[in-house]
Image (tube, rainbow, N blue to C red; front, side):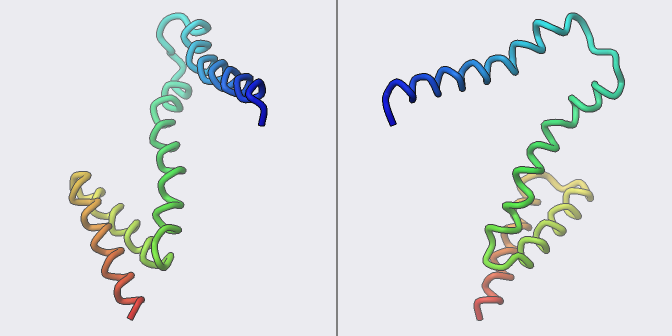
Length: 104
């Protein structure tokens, strides 16, 4: 690939990244009062993180079953108010034990 093309691609990436951050600040003046839009903007980071995380939780384990069981156990532990570290530890232990049992 030519150096000229790489510079153009980098500049386009910079422009696109900055446009999606600057445009809302310049177009929206004041507080957003629309209830639907406020709810949408509030939950968007959580949805994005979930969409990126949940498939990998299932696909990166030795068997998909260990990932699914770990995911369910993590959701249940979080539902009962456990913190991030205990939930992550529970999920890791479950995946480790299930993968060790499936390797036997």
